[in-house]
Image (cartoon, rainbow, N blue to C red; front, side, top):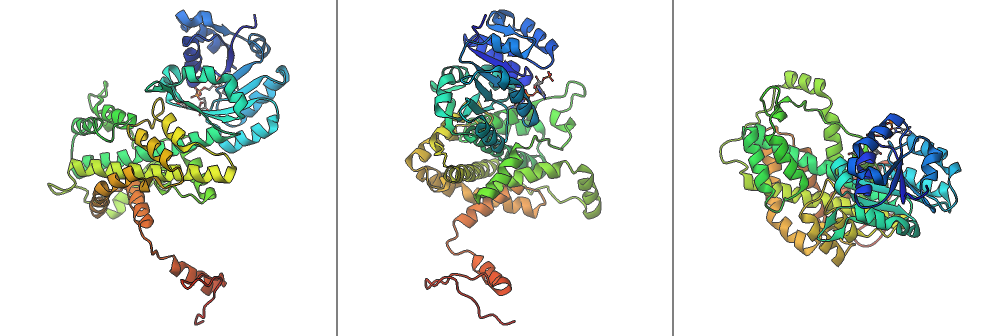
Length: 466
Ligand code: NDP
């Protein structure tokens, strides 16, 4: 019977959770997975939701089970599997049937797929919130033709997280706009996590705090301006005990961070857009360097370990909290600046305040601060978030703490690359007269590139002594 309201391909971690969420919200869904055993097990495990789930063993069975015009979600790994799956599916579909790529595609691929689809309905949607979000309410960033989004918006908004009754599912723009916004989300996620890890390092190595004490500090901050999912889970991660050894989990976890590359895409794209995101770049670099464990051990043997331990009274917790607040504002200012630049360059008209709103619940970077960011961006979306009255006022109260943390950490050999990048950006962006006059002089000296003078004349040269 062709009565499923939607179909889904790929019953891995995210696909299975999303399918259960869709069924849980009252929609009938047909599912298919490359490995049939997984489909069978998924259906058996769905217990009371199994009536709303139609398991299928072949692609044409999946297609036949869905009501026309069809909509089919792909939840397979980004890259070739998406192209392969589209190629296998399209011949089985009719012209008004829609394919929705809900994985973490690179937005350039989504642009390419949307162009290849032409008039055939195709959406690229970014889904954030991990397995838990996919099951109980993710944040959804949609891209593609508006009329195609509107066709499935009732399902996507029903399954999305809600913030004060507003669903966190929004159409961002054409083609790869949704996946682009998701990539920036992930870049900000890298930066947010890295800054928290750096402050954790100051507490662990600088203050010599134990993990329960660190957990309590994060938990306390989760009641203040830093309230966010990432601070909340950092408290829980720091409090967790390894059942095998009885040690804190953080003492048994290897200090080498993994990544799937979405933060790197953001950093690379920011460079293409000439909208730098140095805090995100520092976070991506820090993850890469974390993996060079052998080299780091060799470095410590060669140069000795840094002093690290701070004197009593240095960098009290309030100062660390304020530094994180400042770092976070600066990081988001860069992320939204990048979105603004992309909006211009790709002609997307990305809705900045709506993006802040869609991140308020369901996704990994959800935080109390995003509410104020949405209001500030609504007042003037063109502006650097650092200059919006509310955040300018918060930064005025916190940037000295950021400087103190970076300065003291640096003199004690505690590496704080993302916080340092935030401070350098802040200092750059409040310096009316910078030092690029020297760069221009050098460029003209060796390459006759020309320079502008303060008296208004442009394309000027030397004279320089050879
Ligand atoms: P999993 O590895 O858990 O599952 C992948 C699924 O895709 C499996 O069902 C697998 O089928 C299927 N698959 C793999 N390769 C192919 C292929 N070549 N053709 C057809 N089907 C294939 O991945 P996730 O669920 O974690 O991720 C899915 C997508 O969601 C990715 O793009 C990921 O980046 C994105 N994402 C993941 C998040 C997460 O927290 N995990 C968060 C947000 C987005 P089989 O059983 O046969 O192997």
